[in-house]
Image (tube, rainbow, N blue to C red; front, side, top):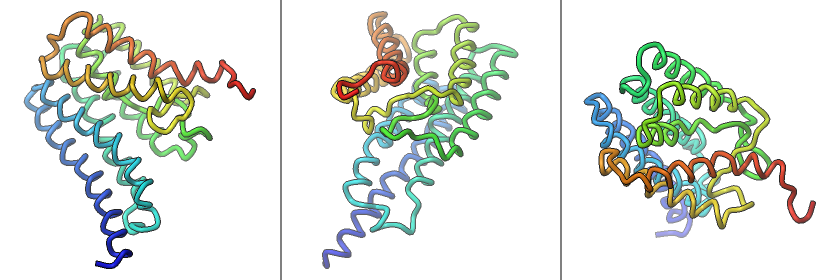
Length: 235
């Protein structure tokens, strides 16, 4: 096997790995159609893990140059819209957490704002953070399911985050944003563990685990905004 063929094989294997996210999205949607929210979120957590791993692999194996026939960015965005936006929005609408008209507002706001954001060519900042809330509604939904706040608070959170998608506010990428990465990356890993725990127990996790999930979510949401107002040592 030539070195060139091996390099191309590795690069295309990364695309295949990314594409498994679409399979996990379908499994999550099937669970959601049966209102099995715990199983749905478990599949979304698996898809979330794949999404966290495939980026570093793509950069390691230079998929843009060695497997350029498949647009990895487009592939990632398609799967992200399904797992980050479409399925979580359906879950919030179909569950009793946002009853009546509040569910309609949430599902329309989430899907409409997110499709515009995903098509925004300026969604990334110079330090590999996101400009505006990056449409991680899967993370929002699992916290709402786990904490079960009053419906008016859930709706307020949805509307505020949708507005911030188009505000000049920065939101960190847990892997690619270098600043505070020694804190952010472990926080993201812990968040994934607590989210998976909540889904595994069908959202009957202990109160302290719910508190930890909420606290980690607040850090991941607010860290980028804090970085905008806290100068670096060089500055």
